[in-house]
Image 1 (cartoon, rainbow, N blue to C red):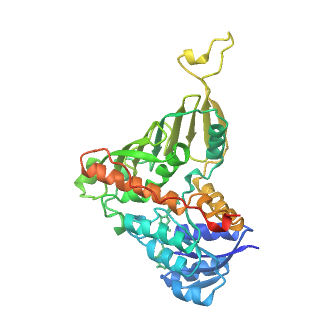
Image 2: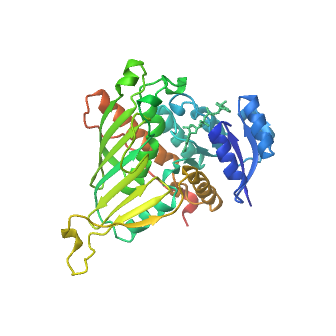
Image 3: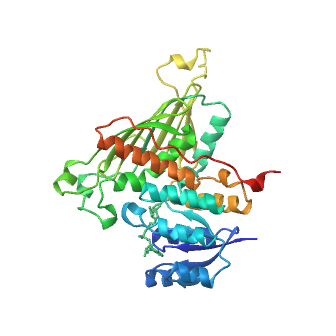
Amino acid sequence: MAIKVAVIGMGGIGNTHATCYKENPLAELIAVCDINKQKADDAAEKFGVKAFYSIKDMFEQCPEIEAVSVCTSGYDNGSMHFEPSMMALDAGKHVLVEKPICADIDDARELVAFAARKGLYLGNDLNHYFTDTAARAKQMQNDGKIGQLVYCICKSGFNGWEGDYHGKMSPRWQTPYSHLKAYCAHPFSVMRYFCGDISGVQAFLDKPGVRATAEDPMLSINSIHVKFANGGFGHLISQRGDAAFGYGGWWSYEHAGTRGTFAIENCTEKLLYWNPQQKDASGRPTMMQATLEPEVYDTGIKSFNATFPVRINAWLEDLTNKVPREHIRASGRDALATLEYTFAAIQSYENGGELVVPHKLPALHGDTQFVY
Ligand SMILES: NC(=O)c1ccc[n+]([C@@H]2O[C@H](COP(=O)([O-])OP(=O)(O)OC[C@H]3O[C@@H](n4cnc5c(N)ncnc54)[C@H](O)[C@@H]3O)[C@@H](O)[C@H]2O)c1
């Protein structure tokens, strides 16, 4: 039976979630909720469901709701995630919250712990690796074609130049770490998906002159060097429209292993694979040559929006299949990991680029309902 869902926060992204639910047979959209009456009413009309202006009223009047998407925003694009998510969990609903899981690390830890205590699913919209390109790269890893990590390089953010700068943005971007907190959940989640937990973080943050002159608080240029618990290193470069990214464009990820290297370009679009074990026509290992030609898999999918239905379908599948909570894809704990790395980066930056060990994640204890 389809899972009865509601969406809280009907801005652009809440409407995207609602569209995904409407188009997915695993879900039945019951209601939408926004404290802004116009936004709630517009969405309700568009999707043919009930509008609510308070979460409490929605849960009282629609007790059949089983799961919600929390698509509110706030400063750092996440400060308004905590209360609606806690209210929904308290009312016994599963929660798919947008990223960043919270703007405050204590809130995020509490939210993840509360979901575990309630025995409910808490997922996060870490949609950047819900792609055909990432799935194929993961398969190559699992097939032993990549080997042990040597390094990864992740470049992701927004292309731009100084002429695009139009001054300080809305209040949600008026903190120094707003880009780091709002955006870097995504690249951190991709790095962790392919390389595992991060055990050391060093960060340099800055802003270009045009922002400095405008007294823009946002540290929009982020360079973060990491060490992975399983070995290997990674470098994350992220920026908010201060320059054009050059090689790989707005979203690229390169992952070099002891057996092969892959790269993803434009998130959804291309997967490249360099096989150093190839031999040339004369039987010479190509590894000895200056350049290796990659095998290229081109999905033809250019739109980043293609990630949302795939991620939401995975969430609905996990709920429908009642997978053990510790196995859900892009869980609240996975999102907490990205925020722990973010706060480690902040600490590193504030201490001149010192090496910071991220805070430990909560242990995975499993669920007694899966003990036979
Ligand atoms: N996963 C992605 O790729 C991706 C991309 C962009 C944005 N996002 C995230 O999506 C979220 C929403 O972004 P947006 O641009 O749509 O934001 P938005 O500000 O346009 O919309 C948020 C809405 O939430 C409503 N709201 C706030 N508190 C509420 C409450 N307690 N109850 C009900 N409604 C409430 C606001 O009135 C507003 O209409 C952000 O957290 C952002 O980080 C994710």
